[in-house]
Length: 70
Ligand SMILES: [Zn+2]
Image (cartoon, rainbow, N blue to C red; front, side):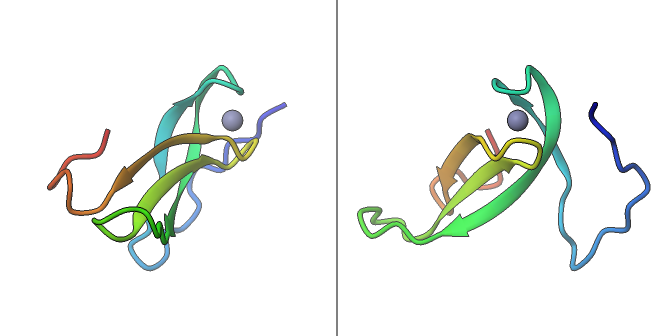
């Protein structure tokens, strides 16, 4: 049911990340979205969203975790 698109060209240095999605029950292709969080003193937050079902699988603040992605 799930069509993997291996070999798709990467654009603009975009990273394709496989993260475990609780809704899909497996590691799926994820899209990183940058969002503005008015309550966050750190500024923007980055949210990982499953491309298969749209579920958020993680979010973190830029700058708060230098060089580390959960
Ligand atoms: Zn999913």
